[in-house]
Image (cartoon, rainbow, N blue to C red; front, side, top):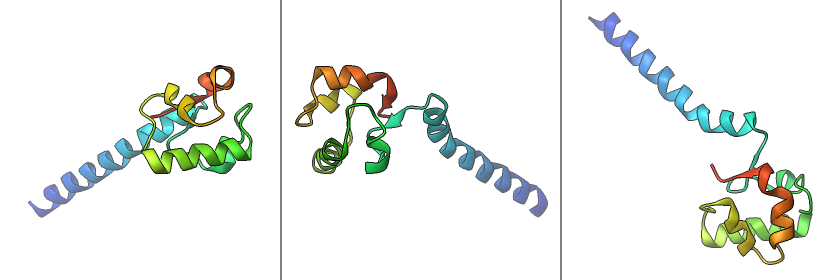
Length: 94
């Protein structure tokens, strides 16, 4: 009885571990940068995003919470339609 319970518990913990990895794995697979979790170093890898804009993104995110959709990035001062168009296929919020 104890062995069976232990086996079930181990399977359950393994399932939880795998489920927590799926979002990170998914984002890594399509090589998109999550604008809700990316740090300065990741954000500056995006075209047209230098250190100044990366800091603004992080500051905006800290003040207003996570971005709900990628288009919300245009709420950050200095990031308009042209910059957004250049990076929209390289970013995600999930």
